[in-house]
Image (tube, rainbow, N blue to C red):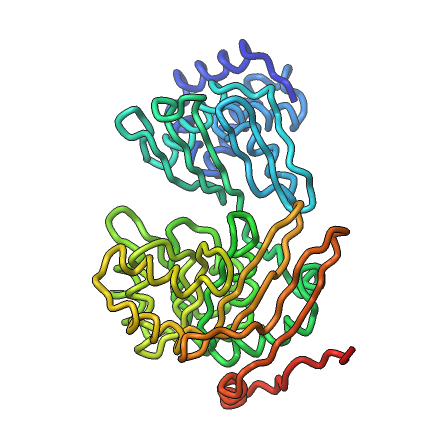
Length: 396
C-alpha cells in the first residue's frame, strides 16, 4: 500500500507536536501503538479511509514498514540487505530480492530498531545486535561496509515450525520415536548445522517432550525459543544474557543453582562451553545448538570454544565430551529444504557411531541409512521408563 511521502511527513510532524509522548512510546509498546492508530484515524480518516491504508501509515511511522509486511507471510524467516538490495528467504519459498528498497530506507529501519531497543549504531559503535517483536537484527554501519550498510533480520515466531504433523518431511517418523526416547532418557545433545538449517526449531521440538516434572533453565542471548509462550504449563526458568550478565555466568551462577534437570542454551558460541561441561559433570542435562561442519566435528568444535577462554587439557576435555555428551545431531538446508542430515552417538573411547544419516540425491530424494544404538543408551532410557526398543525398519 503506497502512501505519499508528503502525507507521511505531515502526519509525523503533527504527532511529534501534539502527541509526542504517544509517538515515542508507540515504537516499543503495542497498546500505545493502537492508541496512536486511533488518533491518526480521527484526524486523517477522510484520506486513510480503510484499515489497510491506516495500518500502512502506522507501520511506516512507528513500525518496521516493509519488514512487517514481509513477516505476515509465515514462510518468511530471514530478511537481509547487502548494501544494494533487500533479500528475502524462508521455508518453502525461493530466495528472492527486492532492488527497489534503498539504503536510506534500510538505515531508517535500523534506526527504528535502535531507538526502540535503546541500543546505538554509529561510526563509533558500528555493529548493532538487538531484538524486537520476535525479530533479531544484526546491522553493520556503512563506515565498515564499503558497499553500503548491511542488515540481517531473523524472524522467529512463538510457534513450532517443526512438529509431529510435518516431521515426515524432515526425517522418517521412526526417528521421531527415537528422539522422544532420547529426551525421556535425558540424553545430552548438541545440535549443529549452518545458519538457517532449522537448529532452533529442532531444539524446540525436543523441548516439547520434556515433562513438567523436569525443570528447564532456558538461556538465550536473544529470544528465539519463546519457551514460556509455547509451554505455559511446563516448569521453565527463562533467562536472557545481556551486556552485564553473560551466558557463561547464567550457566554457572544461576543455572546450576536453580535445581533444573535440564539447562537449555539457545546457542553455544564461545568459552561458555566450559561451564556447560561443568554442569554436565554435576549431573545436569544439556541441550544446545552450535555451528559445526558435521556431527563428528562437534567435540573438537566444543574444545576450540572452551580454549578461547580457559586453559584446558585437550585429552581430559575430550574424554568428558565423548563420555557425557551422548548425541551429536547435524541438520542441513539444501535448495530451500531442511532435513536431518545425521545423528551420531559419542563413546568414551573418542569414537562416534552413525545412528542415522540422510543424503540428498540429484533428484531431490533422500538416501537413508541407519546404524546401531549402544547398550548404554537402551539401559539409560529403560531406567527412565521408555519402551523404545530400536528401529523397526524392514530389512532390505
